[in-house]
Length: 226
Ligand SMILES: C[S@@+](CC[C@H](N)C(=O)[O-])C[C@H]1O[C@@H](n2cnc3c(N)ncnc32)[C@H](O)[C@@H]1O
Image (cartoon, rainbow, N blue to C red):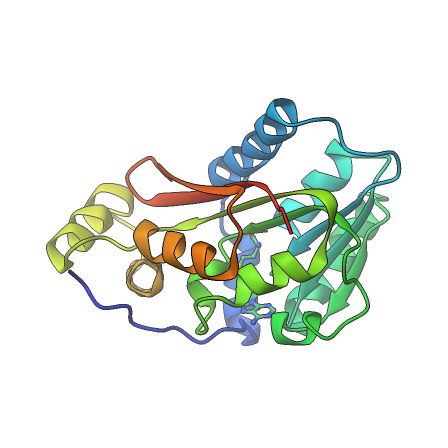
C-alpha cells in the first residue's frame, strides 16, 4: 500500500493558476456534469430557486457549466485562492452568467453563513488537496439543507508506485515534465476509496456512496442525510 503524500492545499501561485486555467480538462469536466445530471435523475428534481455550491471551484471550470445547467439556481463558487477566483469572475462575466464567487477556505466555510442552505454540493478535483481527511465531509454536512444532494469527484490513490508509474505512462506519455510531476503528486496525495468510506461512516454521512470510476477516479455521491 502507498502512503498518502500531502500536497499544498491552496493553488495560489500565478504560474500555477495560469497553467491550470490553460489546461484542457474538458473530458473530466464533462464526466462530472454528467454525473451530477445522473444523480439528480435518480433522486428527485431540485427545489425551485435552489442553492448550488461548487467547493474548491478554481477558475470556474465546473461552476460555469453548473450555471448553464441550472439557470434557475443561485450558484456559489468557493475557493481559498483569490488568483483562481479572479479568473473565474472574468469568465463568468464574459459568458454573462450570474455566479457568486467567495474567497473562503473550507475551514472558513465551517464557520460561515451558508449553514443548512445548499440543495446541491459539488466538488471536482478538490479532495486530494485536503490535509484533514474529514474536512470535506464536515463541510458537506454543514452546508446541506434538508434533501440536499452531493457529488464529489476526484482522483484515487494507486495501490503502489508501480501502478502510479503505469498511469503516468498511459495518460501523459509525452506531456511536459512539469505536468507529469503534478499528476504524480496529485495521485500520491489522493485518498483510497476505503479511507473515504471510513470518514463518511465516522461523520454519519450514510446516504453517500463511494464508486471507483475508470482507472483513476473516485466519485462520492448521494443524499446528504443529517
Ligand atoms: C485542482 S483545483 C480544481 C478546481 C476546479 N474544481 C476544477 O475542477 O477545475 C483545486 C482547487 O481547490 C482549492 N482548494 C484547495 N484546498 C482548499 C481549501 N482548504 N479551501 C478552499 N479551497 C481549496 C485550490 O485553491 C484550487 O483552486
